[in-house]
Length: 115
Length: 113
Image (cartoon, rainbow over all chains, first blue to last red; front, top):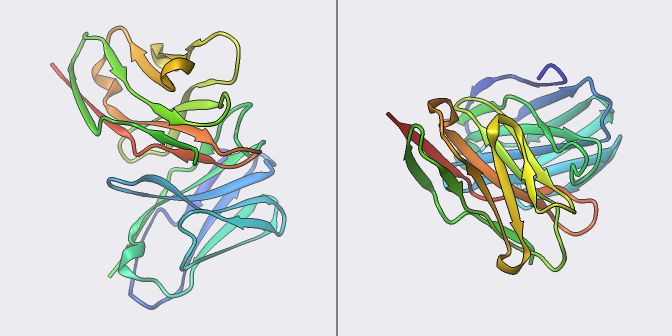
């Protein structure tokens, strides 16, 4: 969907380096989310935001930080990447926290490999 | 704790056959429930949702799901599967309050000729 874009789409990085993934939306939705997807685990929530500068942790937040200085951008940072953070990362947006009206809109994902 | 379980990791069906994907939930009240589909290399797309009212909900691509409170289930069905339905399917529900969705681990659907 054109309303949400993730960058980069693919990235290979070395262990111990910082990495920032970007999620950009044009829908003016209040809520934004970062999930990671791993085989056998489905999607697990890393962090989410319910407004500018308002964020909260998900179930797998260790090793990750986020920032939201503008409504349209939600950044996910791996301060010091580890091999266990090799994953596919998805950003999602919604008008409501549980997406009850229209569900979530997902980005196309970022495939991150930490070597 | 609230949770959602998809018992089947992988299902294979023949093209034209009917399909049922299972989803069981644990929740103290009537939950919102969702089904999403993910085609290979893509993000997730909303198939259908249940909030209240009619327990049989229709979605896109010819899918439907039935909410059964007595069985804590929200199974996804399609009467005749097409090869393009091969994908991974996720059931999801929010935790109490206006909170993010929790996803099941997914069911991968393969369609054979």
